[in-house]
Amino acid sequence: MTMAEVNSKRELNEIAEVLKVMGHPVRLRIMLKLAERCCCVGEIWDHLQLPQAVVSQHLKILKDRGVLESRREGARVCYLISDSMILDLVTTLDKQCCITEKLAA
Image (cartoon, rainbow, N blue to C red; front, side, top):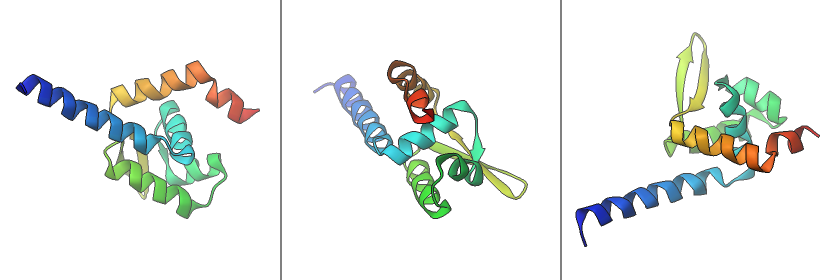
């Protein structure tokens, strides 16, 4: 096995992990919201109409897996998608499947 093959397998494994993490419906909805702009927890749970504890739990999973990053803005912590490839993936999914439109209906 060559080093190029090892790197490709490692990259494929990393991509598969990101897709697994994003595969949960709540986490996918969070990602769709963050594809629009960075948001704090309150904005996300208000948008999703879910308890703050539930949203915080899913945000932690996404952040721990490197899908999201956070930054402090005063007393608030805002979340954003950490990688342009992930952002492109989320926006492409939304465009192809009209997820945001279906959720709004």
